[in-house]
Structures are given as C-alpha cells and as structure tokens.
Image 1: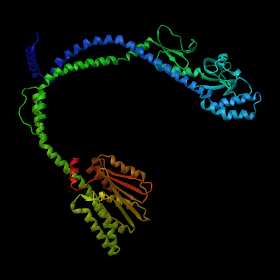
Image 2: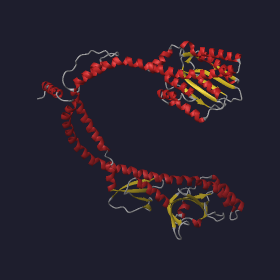
Image 3: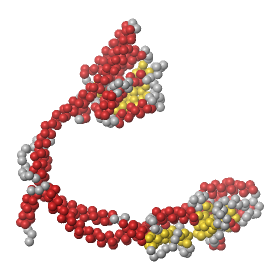
Image 4: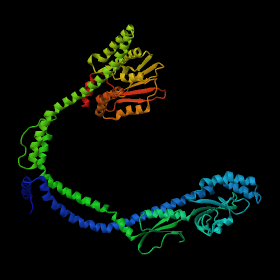
Length: 600
C-alpha cells in the first residue's frame, strides 16, 4: 500500500541518486523508459485511428474538390446567361427589330446601315469573347441583310437546336447541344456547341428572331480538363445534361474509380469526377498531419512527465536563482555557501557568485568610460569644423591685406572677432537659437566681404524657437554650402525658418541658388539611415575631401541626440535648395546633460 511515508522514502532515494550524477545523466536514466512506454501505448492507438478516419476524410475532401469544379463550370455558364439576357432585354435592339419588321420586305439601305452601326455592332462587339462564348441573332424573315457574323438567317442556325420548342417557349431560354460547320478547320469538319437559345419578339409579342449564345465545347473541354487534372493524377470526368446526354467525357469509368458528383446549377447538368483508388491512397498519405497532431499529443504528455521528474532534480538550481533574485538593484548579496556537494548546482552557485561580484565592480567603470568616449567623439568632430572655417576666413583677410585695403581688412577682423565670440560662447556646447542666428549674421558679413558679393540672410523664428537651445555652430556648414554653390552672378538669398512641432524643433534653410543635384541629395539623405557610430567613422574618413562639413553636422546630430533626428535635403517647387533639421526641443541648456546620459 502506497502512503506518504513511502513517497518520502522515494523522494530521499531520488535526491541521493541525483546528487551523485549530473542532471543530464539523471534525465537519461529516468525519462528514457517513460518515453518508450508512452510511445508504445499511444502508437497503437494512432495506427487504428489513422486506418478508420483518413480514408473517409480523403473522400470528403475529393467531394469538396468536385463541388468546386462544378462551381467553376457554373460560373462559366452564368457569364453566358448574363450576356444572353443583356441582349434579350436591350430596348434599343428590340425597337430596331420592330421597326425593321414593320417595314416589311423593303428595308432601305440607310436603315440597314443605321441598325448595324448604331445598334448591332456596338452591342455585340462589347460582349462577344470567342474564348467564352459567341452571341448571334438568326432572323426569321430575310427582309434585313445579314452580315453573317452577328446577324444570320434562320437556315444557318446550328443543327440540333429545337426550333419548335424555342418558338413555343418565347419567354424562357433553352439549353441544348448543337453543331455547325467549322469554317476554320478542314473540309467537312463540324464544331460541337453548347447553346443557350431564346426567342426575340417585338413589343407586341411577334417572333422576329432567335438569339443564340454559343459556347465552343472544345474550348470548354480544355478548361474542364485543366481544372480536373489539377485535382490529382488519375482523375476522369463526365459532364452530362439533365436528360443524360453527354456533353463531355474523357474516358469510360470502371470499378477501379470512386465517383463524386457535383451539380452545375445554371442548366442543372451533372459533373461526375472519378478518382482512382490509387489517388485516394496518395491523398490519404498527405493527411499525415493527423498523425503528427497525435504525435504532438504524445510528446506533450512525455514532456509533462519530464517536467515533474526534472523538477525534483532541478530543485537545487532554484535555490541558486532564488539567492540572486533576492538581491537589490545595487547588486549587494550576501556571500555564503548555499549549496554543498559535487553536482553542477553547487559548482554553478560558486561560479555565478564570483562573476556577479566582478560585474558589479566593473559596471560603474564601464559607464564612465562610455561617457568619456562620447564626449571625446563630439570634441573631435568640433575640432574638424572650427579649423575649416578659420582657414577660409583668414585666407580672405590675407588677400585684403595684400591688396592694401586696410579698412576692409580691419572690418573683416572685427566681424571675425564677433563671430568667434559667439562660437566660443564661454565654452558652452549649447546656445540659444537666436544667438546662433546672430553669430550666423556675422558669418554672412564675413562671407560677403570675402567674396565681394551681396549676401542676404532672412531669419523668421517663432518665439518658442528663438529661445530653444541647439548645438553651437550647427547651422554654419549648411549656410556655407548655400553660399559656395549659389549663382555667382546674382545676389544670394538665404531664408531661415524655425518652429516647434510636438517635442521637436524644426529648422529649414532655403537658398535661391541652383537646386542640389539628385545624386548628391540622395547620398546626403542616406546618411540619416546609417548607425550613428558607423556615420561617425565615415565622417572622419571625409576629412581629406571638400564635402566633410555636412557629414560632420549629421554625425553630430545622430551621435548626441539619437537616430530619429538628422538633416534632410530637398528641392522645393519654388526652386533653389531646402535643408531641413529635425532636432529635439531643448528649452534649457541644463537638459543637455540629461540627453547625453540617456544615450548611454
């Protein structure tokens, strides 16, 4: 009799067994027999279910495929019925036929031409599609000239159409099998047709013509064969009228076939598809998903057993994880031997404890180094920009001095001093946008002096944007490019607009120079898709080229603010070139340190 005392003894035996072996060894010795027994028990049940269920399932699936094939035919015939009814109910055609009937045997050639040009040709040309069906009118009287394409005489009606029955059932349509001479084939060849026939009458009810919608059975047969063969190799089919008349049949059926029937509702015909027993067996083999599902059930039960068994073996590891889970956010844990023994759990406890303490000692040093790295990268980028501008400006002043234009050189030096007073900004990295614009005004004066041309700066800032803080010297490279690539024969106009949009600062810089080339625009905009650190390395590699200014601007933005911000170029409808900055809206320079820390 099993009781709690026996369970305690079993648990003690298992703990002793697991303590002397690895976890993997424990699972192999205990779980493997359970899996073997489980497979033996459920394997036999799966085989029996497979034999009884799969064959019936396959037959139901093949019946569904047969119904879909019948639906395909029904759609084909429905289109023929739609075209026939459209012609039958066309009031213009009915009116024209009545007028022609009232004229008797003498229909003027003018009336004949009007009938074909205004009524018959537009109507039939829009509907007739030889691939689907052909619509024709067969005149009862020969008072109208027949063009032999859409309009024919009654003696040309395909053989097999029950004319008497059509005349007696004027308000309804009749499906029938017919044939006619095939003019496109060899002499004596005839073409089999499936026809939808109805009588055309005047408004008073007098019969004047027979409307016949003709479907080429050869074309229809190729479609049926293609659809049926898609259902599986070895299929045969038979399509017959309600009275049993065969429309299409590819081969005879015998006892080796399993037959499924589908109804084509448009004409109540019957489609029979015979599937070979070999096909059914092939289809049944494809239904092994049922077997897979049952196998998954067995696997689930097996893993359930594994869980309960491994739970006892892995209980010692839970003591280790519980110790680390109890530690606070600062990582202070009580160092003590929790587990004793030679198994993996005891060794893991000691190793994780040592690694955890080393990690906590190094994490602060890591963040300090990471922060220093970002600051160093930013300072390197700034050091690339300042010498670049200083070199260009001093070269212009030197040229003035050599030209003995002292007053102009002195004015250039004054503007340069004012400019660098704004740029240095007492060592601050962030500067209010209005002060940055004032510094750019000094820069424009320097460039106007250097290039001896008229440069106009037109800033338009909202109140919020004026007080927003941005990286200093951020806009200057864009202004410099606008001047360098502007039309030297006219004044250079530069418009700066800035506003707050959500939590972002938007700044646009437009110039009236030639539009930026498409390949340059695409190359610069693509920089906004690169990783910030990769872009930083790319910027450094551009120092030897003339275009490094914009690279550095985009790199500074993405490195310090994140990858959702950047600088994009476009060509507006008004002409010129438009540069658009997307920056975070920083209302106070104190928040700059928060942004830098957040990037870490």
